[in-house]
Structure formats: structure tokens, C-alpha cells
Length: 90
Image (cartoon, rainbow, N blue to C red):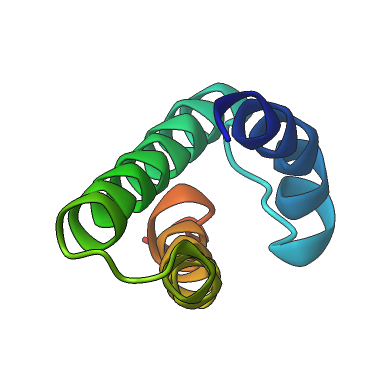
């Protein structure tokens, strides 16, 4: 999970910055926020798996399937409103 998460995170930064959100701001600050957002997503996924699968014994297929959808929405919103937010006009 960790290796694939890292590879996926790094490869999608450029695509999301340029095409999905057409971000024109500072790339370095956006990259730091991007890594932070995906770090939060990783921790959320990990702790949800620990709680629901390991402690509550919910089948992992169901838990991860739901988490994929939840994390997709969560990460999209974080990117749209925080990471790649359009610059404010003065």
C-alpha cells in the first residue's frame, strides 16, 4: 500500500496541477500542500483499515472499496479548495 501510494502521489502532482486544476500559482508551496493532503489521506486510510478490518473484523474488500470512494472525494476537495486554490484577486 505504501509504495504504490507514494508512486501514485508523485506522478499525479504534475497532471493535477497542469490539467485538472490549471494551477498558475507557486509550484513549491502547492507541492508541499499536495504531499500534506496525500499524507493525511494515507493516514486516514491506514487508521480506517486498522479500526474496521483489524478491530471490528469487517471484510477488507468492503472497507477498502468504500475508502477508495471516500478518499477520492476528500482528496479532490482538498486539492480544489486548498492545494490548487486559484489566487485571490485584490
